[in-house]
Amino acid sequence: MAVIQVPSIILPILSPLGTETEIVADLVEHTSIEFPVDYLQEKEIHIIATEVVVFGVPGNLQCWVELSPIPSVNNLMWPFPLPAGAAYWAAIGGGGGAMAPVAPLIEVATGVTTTVHSILIPWAIHSPWARLVVQTPVAATPATALWIVQVLFSGASK
Image 1 (cartoon, rainbow, N blue to C red):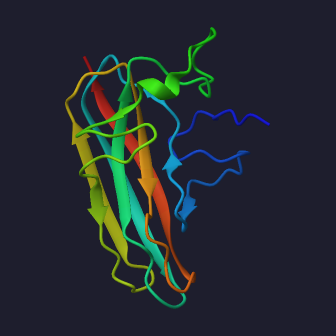
Image 2: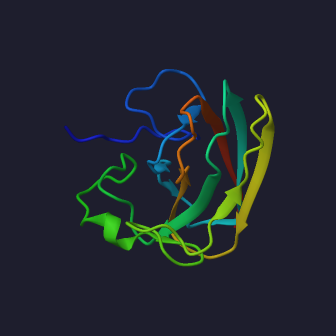
């Protein structure tokens, strides 16, 4: 079954639940919806990441922005058929698509529950489409610690 992304300012979920968070607690990349940035400047993504710790420490959080000249086939904002857009996504600083960037932004976990981390990712590179990728490449040991992530995108129109 194909998964179609629902436009939202948060990371995508399979069905809209009315919440504004996504739990990041595994080795999987969590990719946001694709949003148009063609006519924006002073673009930035603000991430609020909260540690939830029962026992242990969540894996460090890695974040990066990927850009593309076209959206992927999962985008509902594009009105006509697209080529395989996944091949066009590239991370700022190298990498992206099927591989992580060379130097993602890394937020180090403290292991203290309810610790809030504020992360700001500004960028000036021009591209029509952008998306955010969040990942914990190392699993928490034991698996009783995780991140709750909220994401806000902002930019000024040209």
